[in-house]
Image (cartoon, rainbow, N blue to C red; front, top):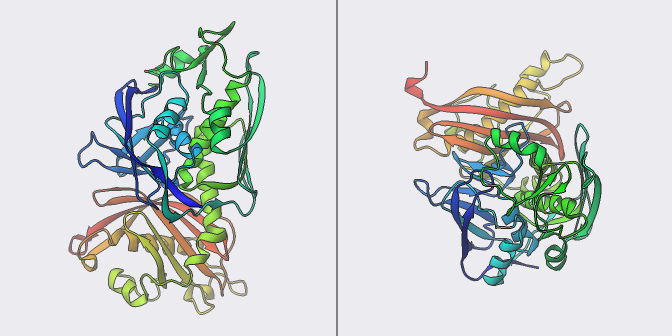
Length: 439
């Protein structure tokens, strides 16, 4: 199957649901393989924000919308536009915005985005499509929330919601996604809010642009809108719409089944990252093992480390300012095994993180001129987890994605795999300094 984009630009202006800012969104054709990306035309340099797992902003609390962030630029409430693009089977789009938030159509669904994209004329492109194939089960759980990915043909979505309100209650809906089923079953389902939550949301700086025109408001006695429900179970259908838009962050159309229970945007962001990690560990990284982007001689020209502290043997893949994949071959001759532990050699967790940081250092030093005159200082580690031991004979594959680069400071998400199984992960904060300025 071929990739698809649109044949001409399409745009409209409106009010952002949460920021209340008036913005114009313009959908533009994009080259094969470029995926979806937002461009903030109102900011200096028109920064681009790629639609990918690394751009997903998750600050720990309930987001109530999907926020993407890259290199200091961000865009809010992208889920309905992305759901329309993915629901219409598009692969590549540039989406320009002259403000911080995608404007909400007047009736709070994806229907207006569908109209715009269809008017812009979807077309096939010469490149073949490479779907995101779910090859093994992946489960995300957080309290009473659960999201499950399973292998399957095409894309099946299912959602269960449970609300303590008689008009909503428990609703379940499943959908095999095609452009026809998307338009018929979920594209017109509107966003909703309980009236009892309105004041607290506004106090948190949200729904500043919300009204009875762009959302269903459910009061204690029932709907507060003049328009009736478009479907008897419109609430769960809209949650399916949100889920589809959030899954677009994977960057490719999905083949498999996604089952969600009581989840929201924050959970979807974490699930997308988990699914992406599992996918890379199962298949994506294996395809890189025969490649050489930087051999050991090139690494030694970039990195200041030497025996016994140079813990990178090869760089397999490097995307400038975005991603790096490298390997460390662990042998029984490693000096640390003599004391960690005699008779039961295990690579120290701190050295797994050090090797991960060195792979990330190659990516970071590749962003500056004269890398041989620079050093990368480790500034912090967050959310480090170690899932299984690394032993002699293992080949550890490190995969790091750049989350934020500001001046000479960067944040990266790192993962380590052995034979496709994740052994460690961490968020790393580093800084570039001049060697002559180093203390």
